Each structure stands twice: as structure tokens, then as C-alpha cells.
Image (cartoon, rainbow, N blue to C red; front, side):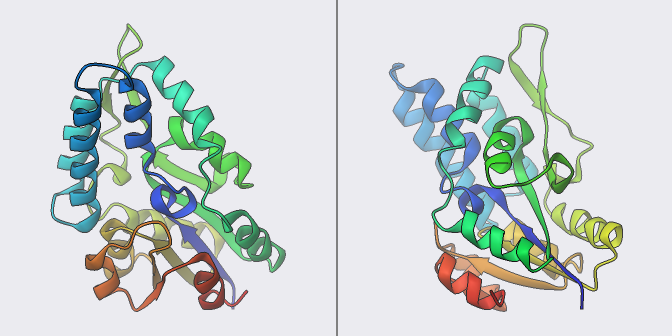
Length: 223
């Protein structure tokens, strides 16, 4: 049976939330920067736990972030060193067994692409949101036509990847409620909640299978 494994990125393949990471770096040393970054992280947690609509969470976070193109590029390079320990080896084993491996993120391609490249993902293996920059190079919005910019958006993306590859089974792996939604909505055939970076109780309680570490995830994936 041919299968594909679809990984979430933030707090799954990466040990941080990429947008929060970028904002924290940009605000470092600024008056009130630490409190502002903490507020943004709280909004992220609410969105990942399903307590706040994902698009609403994204809108608030983008408006608060105040990122420039330079901030994004700086954070993107630094994120390549924020890989979740053990994930590179797990991905290598999965690929050796001819499993199709993809990264589907509610984060932003401009931030996570270098890290995903380090994990062996080709550009065609990645689905993520996209920033919109204004003429001064500031992040002003996001691509609102991208299904990943709304709650439930990972389901259609997972279904499209399954159809594209002709796989019999699509397995979604992630820490957030948006990852669970990909399974609950029928886009993915199976779901493994991942708590190796952060355990979200809303996900742990709903997930048909749950891994508290990369080693547990490997066992559940049969590698």
C-alpha cells in the first residue's frame, strides 16, 4: 500500500513557531518588545489549540508583527538551525522506504523554506502560506486565496497531495488542531498528534494516535 506522510512544520519539524521566532528576533532590544512577543505567542497558542479561528489568529499576528523583508530573511536563515532533534533521521528513514514525505504549514514559505531544504524537502514537497509585502518591503498581509490561511485548510491540501501522488493512504502528523482538522475533515486518512515539542491537550484528547517524542513517532510510522 502506497502512503504519503504529511508533516506540519512549526512545533513539529521545527522546535519553534516560525512567525513568533521571527517577531521575537525583530523585537529584541526594542522597548516593550518582550511583552509584545509574548502576547503574539499567546495568540498563536490559542489558534493551535482551536480556541481562536486560524485566519483570525493569522490576521492579528501579522498586524502585530511589523516585520520587514530583512526581518524575514534574517529569521529564515536562523530557523535552519531550529530543527527538532531526530526529525532529520526520521525523514531519511521514511524516504529510504519510498514513503512520499511532504511538509504542509500554516506558517510562511519565506520563513521555513531554508529549514525545510536542510531537512531534504524539495520546493515541490512544500505547501505553506505566503507573505504579501508592500512597496517599502514591509509585511502588509498574506495570500488570502491560499487554503492554508484559514481553519480547515490543511484538509483540501492533504487530499490534493494524495491525489497528485496516487497514494492509497495519507497520514497527517502535527501538534495543532489545524493538523487534526486535516484528518477530521477527511483530507487525510490517518492522524498522529505530535507532542515532542509542545503538548496541546486539545490535540492529545482527539488524536487517534499520539506521539510524545520523535522515537514514539517513528514507532507509530513503522520505522
